[in-house]
Figure 1 (cartoon, rainbow, N blue to C red):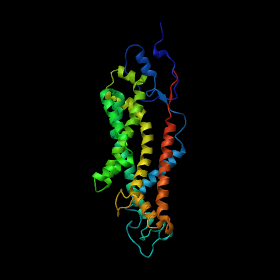
Figure 2: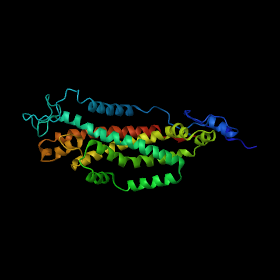
Figure 3: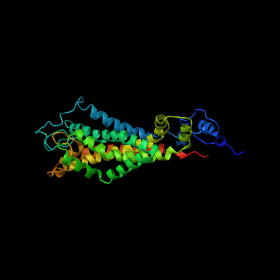
Figure 4: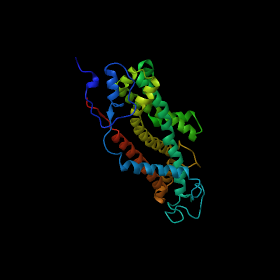
Length: 317
């Protein structure tokens, strides 16, 4: 008599919670009881000090932006005409711009716009596009075909061009409108990533075993598939945050982002490279550019480390 699947030796580094354990007759029960829930195992070792350093730096930037109003900073739009275009000093740690405004205050207050535009739309896209991708990848069928076609159509338009077109018909530009527009262009990307990852797991043995034990669709999606799809989604979402921040800076450079007097990192840089400011006072463009560079570097390193840490390999059967 041939051996049942439960008699096959499994090699695994760790047991992943969420395995199907309800009893059914024959080999399905043995397979469900011994197979790791994801069918995959992560590499040994911790996530690494680089991830925590970068995460701490991003958290520090977020805290500065959130607490900007209570920090001992000058008003970002206060014009000190006795200190115009000066370099870093004890009075103005990062110097001032061509109107005597403190650059440190403007960068910290301006980072609020960039951080909201970076994180909020990606979070919305992760929820909306992610749930659609999870359902489409699991169920397939006509709904998957329609959603897949819609995502292809939306992705056919470059993100920057799509936002510029939407802005043309939806003025004036506000932070809420920008957030919605960025979420609109990020959702299809996250949909495709999560759908593709879900497809790779939907037919795995641990999902088949859970379905055979009578698990409901909600349990299959939330307990079996979601924990396995989430690492790839979060890693890609961090890259999406970095891209959104760059896009906002590009829009600000074109004069299509948040209008003055509200400061954002993008329009501070734009102000620094216009009207010969770059030759007279390079600090106006230097400091916000360095801020964006450090933020994006930290986000990219975090995403890369997450991808490496959850670089899952097949279980040897």
